[in-house]
Image (cartoon, rainbow, N blue to C red; front, side):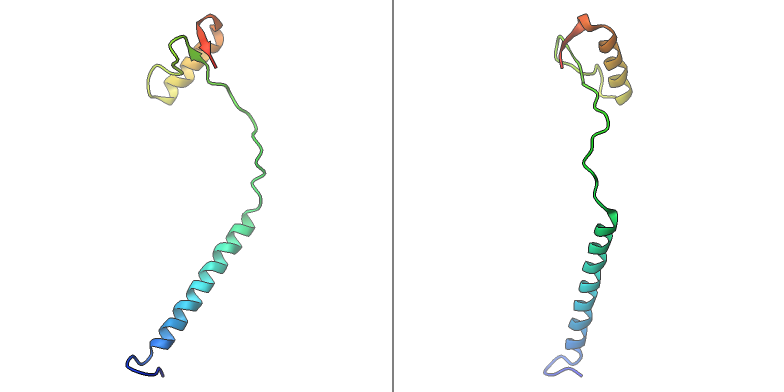
Length: 81
């Protein structure tokens, strides 16, 4: 039993403390199991810019990839990297 005005309050705090300790241990365990990421970059493709400084003509990944292919195959239209 607790003491003072709030009987059982000590038990609730103790359970909350154990729950926080268990949650922290689980997070640390999960982070340790994930292992190192390696930090290795496998491949990087340059984003070519046209003479106006654009890397795409529209805000679409498909359009960007198509325009990048166009700039790779037409180097005379490139303005930078």
